[in-house]
Image 1 (tube, helix red, strand yellow):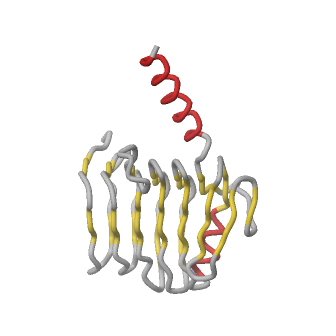
Image 2 (cartoon, helix red, strand yellow; image 1 turned 45 degrees about the vertical axis):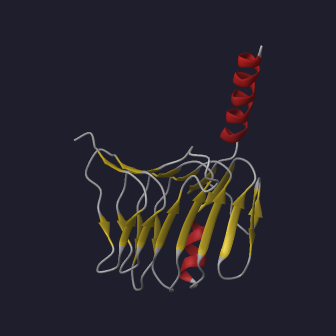
Length: 178
């Protein structure tokens, strides 16, 4: 009976977490809040998800181009499904996920640096990692990976931080299908 109860509780916990993904996508909502997400703060601005949330890429890019740093926070996963291209302003971008971070589109900066921080498993329960399948170009901004990371895609990925530091604070796995 105890084993069945433990499996049920773990399954219920997993199902609850699956419904708390923050997705940055071209078809997402705009503004300062929407279905299961809201913003707080002035600089940095924190964009937090309380359930499944789809946010338009322009929300993040507009803050960055205005020189306002952005912190993306999700209880479970963060999924970047549309490229972030900063063209102005000096700002940083932080991904803070309770579980996994999926970078499924590129991140780039022109004109000024864009420091990046990827903090998977931010609740320290050992259930999180970072997966990068596209290039990162920070134009001189430091890049920090705060958990295990996998680089896997159909081609090799590049991290271009010019002379800025790139820190890996977890295991690194390099693999691609080509």
